[in-house]
Picture 1 (cartoon, one colour):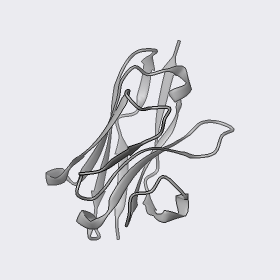
Picture 2: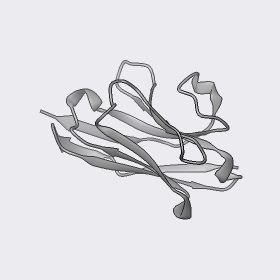
Picture 3: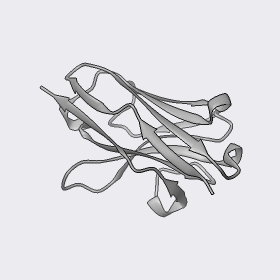
Length: 123
């Protein structure tokens, strides 16, 4: 069974950068698409970015296009989310998830989830 662990969250000023990492272990990881989601207080969990198991296709939410980049490190069984030009509205708990196919919705498509890592962007 796939186990996911996020890291790299923290606090940063507006305009700063953070790099999130999600390590995966167990299961047949090479066949899974991976996605990043976030959930702010009082809001529903939303899709941020995703990548196919081949790494050939990526998908981004409109709110992060041009600022965030998702990538896959096959040798380390990890996915990365480079977040640049951060804004206060990016503040949320960020989760990584694994799916058998790349989709932005519904959440039920994703079979495995990490515990989340907090990202706080201050003015």
